[in-house]
Image (tube, rainbow, N blue to C red):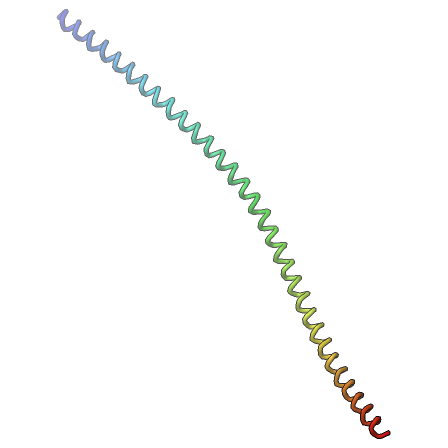
Length: 114
């Protein structure tokens, strides 16, 4: 019986030692995982800040694009107006040229008649 109790005590001590070792390993693993989570949180925070900065830049670029579109539309309208004005002036020039040609012709006829 004494041998049995001694054996049980040895086994129990080994089992307790194994459990302490296992508990220490689990604690180390937990600390490693907590550290890994902290690192991932820091990475996530950095990426989030970077994304926020890029989002702000995108918003600025979108506003610039909208302003450029308005400028382009305004320039198209101005170009259209200038083309219409040019066309009107070309028509007026053609009319005046015809009148000048007629006047010159009349003057030449008058000059020949004299």
